[in-house]
Length: 294
Picture 1 (cartoon, rainbow, N blue to C red):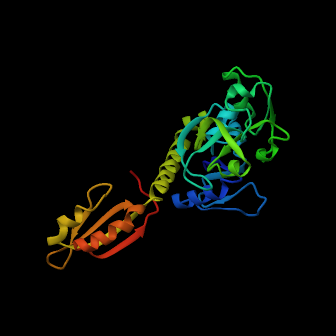
Picture 2: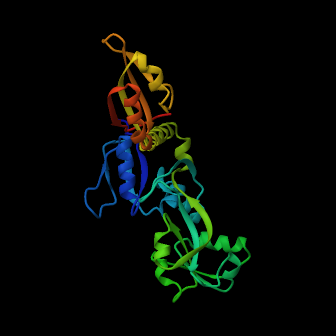
Picture 3: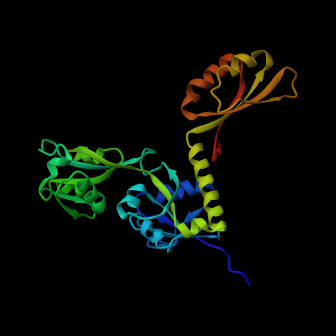
């Protein structure tokens, strides 16, 4: 009796959890929680064994081989100094699709305007090792203390500066803080243990997941358009089309008409459809896309 192969996959718990589940759903994998406190989500692929963990911990467990692979931030890979294979870069987050930034911040009006101004100061952060290496690169000695989040409320009463991640900068502005320097730009990475990456079955499984997730992300900003076009208007219609490639054109049973289908950026459709209509297209249908593989 053969044992079924499994891929032990770390899923980030916290702010990225729901966004990750939603992304996997678009990629074709349905994750659900059995309870609010469970660390073992259920997935509709029996060859995946998911474990819900804080993203800060995932790189370490991947490096140690407890997990085969996992989704975590580049920031936490760097902070842990983990030796892992970074297979893919997925730009998605809880508010936007922009990378997050790891920044040094200080109160507006303070004398801290560069790394050199941190000499002898106190800094609060979740990124202790990353911050210590930053200070070492700049030849600065300062006290770095670990903080369980909510660093913004600690300045200036408890600490002089903080190192935090920010997606939009709104929390820093709300606490009257300025960005002094950027330590790192971070996106979500699919990190893999070296031994798992060397295993043919696990590597193929991981590559399949990466392909489908990238396809789901590609599709987020695109839509499909179908329309019927008289041949006499075909040139004027196709001149308007910013398609990924040349549009698909098929003859219709009605003499002198064709069906045309394209994929376009969603943000162009509001201007494109009226122009297509004026150029002679009829029966224009816009439809969403789940996956686009380039």
